[in-house]
Image (cartoon, rainbow, N blue to C red; front, side, top):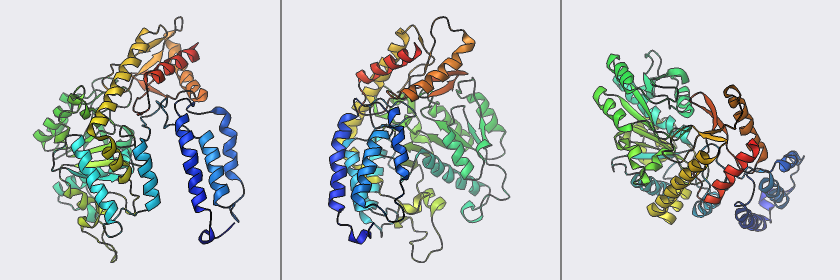
Length: 469
């Protein structure tokens, strides 16, 4: 419709978003997570406007109208699918600020401001989780990229022990890097190994039951039999029931056999914030690398993961960029593009910095402990319901259970629970998906949204039971 240089609607367009924000946020407590009746609105996104454009005011107005109606309202308090937090008010405002300032957080020369905010935010996160001062890290796009970052550093460490500079020469000609884990290893860690060239099937799993609890004796026998060093993946917060590998025991094995210990603590690392659960992550300060995800329990917007390393100099080894004369190549002081997988990077540090500055350790401890209480409330409601059956203990914020109404034969329960999971998503009032736990199809709602209250937990159980009936 017009050249953006001639767009005179900029202030009005921004005000459209501002004016839509408060009513939308205020509505989240009572909105269904997804309104099935809104699906036809999605067809309006393909309106033929590409050739000439329709102007910014009409475009943003249409986007707001469709998005606020047909979007999945995962920022609300009744979204229990996957492990997704909402966005705190401070983080949301800071995310808008990040878009406003449009910083390239790759190098100090491109934005000293973004680089300094990231440095402070990483220091605060390290303090929040009680990691030693020697640990360093980088912000990345997701838990998958955090696993990628830690396992990339592990790969270069392992290559050194084979006498090879993997950064320069790659993995060709090397034997397969041994990667050992219990049965809680997450798909994102496998994807990271896939992207690194090891293959997603490279993980050797040592589990003592169908749930996936690690078999420490079998893992140690394998370590003792290996001719060289290995990488161990520990899991702090398993996604089906919130269980933890014994990180301290894995750290003992890593020290005993000269292995690299990588801990996937995507959401479980937040157990460190409460004295009630801190024991679950005992030993994580001994890990060589740790993967975390801020859009989960930190409640900041996508895309916000982070990785910590015991020896942060290894990030520069794995991710330094050679070659281009205009870039500060091979100089980790040049910026965080040298310390992680991305080059051009959004200033994702701003929401993290803002939410930690706004609420502090005390605020996050209060939120985590509220969620612990809500998970126990949900567990009690499940235990008291004659048509529900809890399948696991509740150490953290996930409650794993299934429908088990009277008169339904055992062999029909998996099918019933699959239909129940789909019915929850189709209904839209609350969201929770299915999984398979100990060979049984089950629901596994995760409670990590700062807005969630007891009323939301009660509503969730009521909806589930009504759909069963």
